[in-house]
Image 1 (cartoon, rainbow, N blue to C red):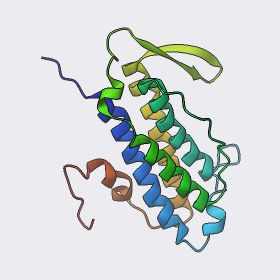
Image 2: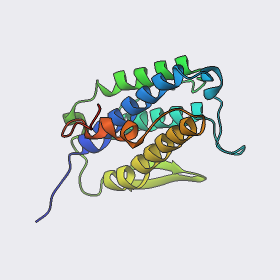
Image 3: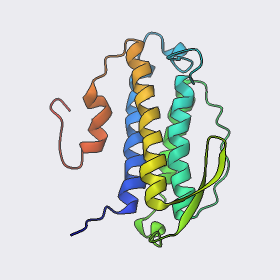
Amino acid sequence: MSSTIPLYDATIGVSTNSLKTLLDLLKKAQAHPEADTLAATRLYPDMLPFSVQIIIVSNFAKKNVERLAGRQLDVWADDETTLEQLVARVEKTLDLLKTVKPEDLDGWSGDRTTEIKIGSFDPVKATASQYVLGYSLPNMFFHLSIAYGLLRMKGLELGKADLLKNFVSDFFTLPGQ
């Protein structure tokens, strides 16, 4: 017996929950005494700053819409450097995701592929499941986790529930939420 997970839930649903989590984190960051410096925070000098972690999650959500719903979207500047700008970016991305319906992702079955760039490898052809499970979702979770870790490093009181509550909210309410 095989089971399937709707492509919409795995992409638009997970992207929405990731962005809602970032929005929650950003709002907590805005209340931090060092709020003005948090966007530039890095874990290590050669790593991307907090602001870029947010932009990358937003871009993966946007690319899910472009690649899987077949939409040609405007290029966004990717130049947000303040928490306020990052909040606006996340809200803009959430608004975009609200325009996608499950039927917009119909037609993704079998050997149909999309082209992606992985580092210096361009193009790489991937089926929807290869793209979503092997590239898009792992990248979103990586950058979401780095953003969370950067804020923890700066002393924000965050816990695992802050990272998970939007993902489990449709079937479970975490204690204290």
